[in-house]
Image (cartoon, rainbow, N blue to C red):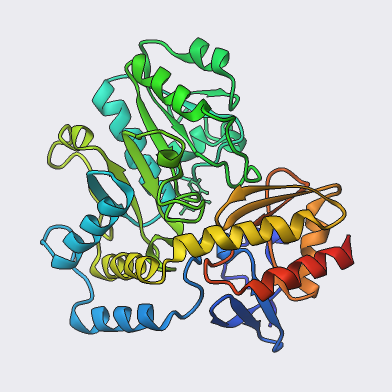
Length: 378
Ligand SMILES: Cc1ncc(COP(=O)(O)O)c(C=O)c1O
C-alpha cells in the first residue's frame, strides 16, 4: 500500500517507516506484504504487553459493552480503581488522567507555576517533554520554535551542579527532568545527581517534576525510575504504555500539591474516560500477575549481554526495556537495514544510537536473532 495519503498530514516525511502494518501478535508485527517483524520499538515505546494481549482485549471489550463514555463530571467506579492502582504502584498520592504525555506535562508545569507563583521552569539540555506549547518550551530541541509563548525556561546540562545552582533563584517554579532521557538516546544522569538536583530545586522553593512518560510504568525497569534513583517527585508524569496501547496518560502528584488545586482550575473532556481507566486497571493488573516489570529487567540484561558482544557496538546502556545501543557509525542506515531483516528498532537524537523499547514479554530468541542480525550488518 502507498504509505502517503494526501488527506493525512505528512508530519514525519522521510522518517516514517516505509511499511504498512496490518496485524500484530505479542512482540511480532505483520505488514501488508506478509512480512513479519520483531518489534523492538513498541510504536514510540508504548507497547509493554505486546499486541493483542487476550486479557486486555477481553477487559476492553467488557468495558465497551458495559459503559463507553462519560466525562469526569460524573463519578465512575473504574476511575477510582485506576487511580488507586496507579498510586499504589508508583507511591504517588493523587492522579489526574489525561490523554497524552504532553498534556500530562502541561498540567504539571501549570501546577508548579501556580503553586509557587513563580514563572521560571528549569529543564535539562537534551530533554524531551512533548509538542504542546508548554512542553515544547522545556524540550531542548524545540526550545526556540515558539518562544516566548511557553514562558520562561532555563536549560542546564545534565550532571552540571554549578549550572543548576546558577540557574536557581526566587523566580524558579520547578524543574522538569526525565530520569532517563529516552529520545536523547537513553542517557542516564551521573550517579546520585538527580537526587542532588531535586534537593537543590526544593531548597530554592521549587517543585521537582519527574517526566516518566517514557521511563515509567516499568519500561526503565521500575514503576518510576526517579524513585529508584532516590527522588520523591512532587509531580510525576506517566503515559505511553500505561494503557497497554490505549491512549492515556496521567499527572501524578503528592497530596500537598493536590490540595492546592482549586475546583475549575484544570479540566479535560476525555481524561479519565471509562475505556482509558479500564485500560489502566487491566494493564497494571497484567503487569503484576505476569511479573512483567521483573521480566523486562531480565530481558534488558539479556539485551545488554547479547548486543554488547557485537563488534561495532560501542556501549549498551539503560535498564529494563529502554535500551540505547551506541554504534561506531550512524544508526539510521543500520535501523533501515535491520528492517529489511525483520526487526523494527528506534533511533534517537544522538545520530549513532539505536533506541530499543520492545514489549516486556518479548521472547529471548528475538534478542538472539537481533544480535545475530546486527552482527551480520556491522
Ligand atoms: C519523556 C517524554 N515526555 C513526553 C512525551 C510526550 O508524550 P506524547 O507524545 O504522548 O504527548 C514523550 C514522547 O515521546 C516522552 O518521551
